[in-house]
Length: 222
Image (cartoon, rainbow, N blue to C red; front, side, top):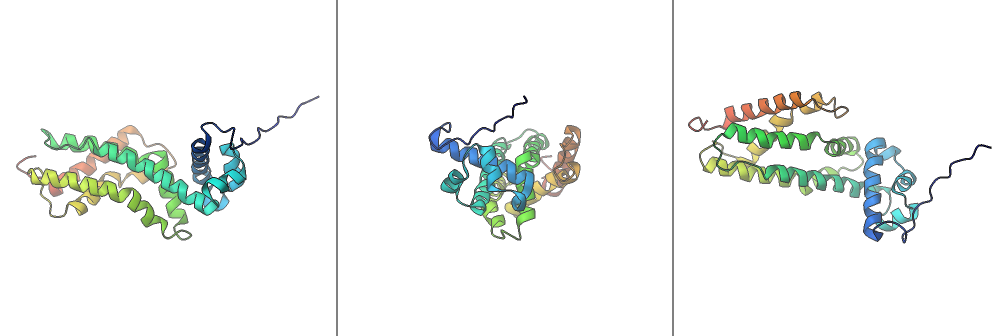
């Protein structure tokens, strides 16, 4: 007689590893996977509950309905992406012996942050659901990208004050720096559907940094 495999029952509130915090994190992790894979419209709370190993009621108790869960999931991705970006900016050169090399190092790290799976999923979800959730774009930008851009602007301003760069608007220059180094990445990754070849990433970043330096570099220090 052929036996049938029984599915594992959802973990109860009491049995879930690490208790309440563990349940909430498991729900968010599952939500990130399901929303990224299926999109908001096709994703179901039942599927998320199954992947998280919790009951559907537990999701509602911890994070509310599907819309609220979606908002929490995107905020979680944005927070993680922002942490990685801010870590990358921690290596920004302040008094570089070789300005180009210093900017290349930081730019490469920023490009890797832009191209990673979760950042790509975040952008895809925002683009696909912006009509349904028009307020999410600004909410996500304020909680992550805007902070990183302002931090980058401060770093560029310090380089300008030290005589390495010539720029009038550090915030605009920061936005242009990021745009130059990530401009080719969506094409190279086929809109996030494949991993970018390391050599292609290096070439794209170098082209962006060189263009930035041609526009803003102080010729006396290059």
